[in-house]
Image (cartoon, rainbow, N blue to C red; front, side):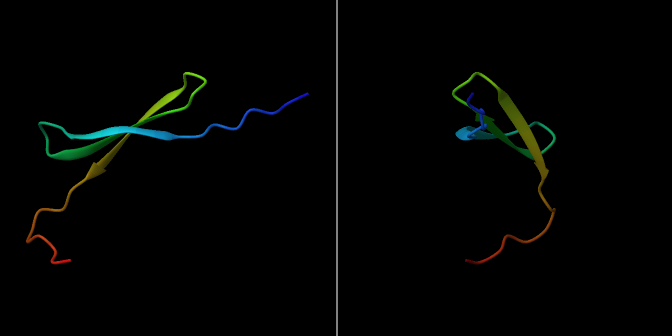
Length: 47
């Protein structure tokens, strides 16, 4: 008996109309996820 482990593969990023960062990921089994991140309003960081 095998056990399936989801492996999240990056499907891309987008910015919503509200200014949130959207990350889309999926597994080879067909499961998919969308994660939203609120971007801080302020000065950009220097890297």
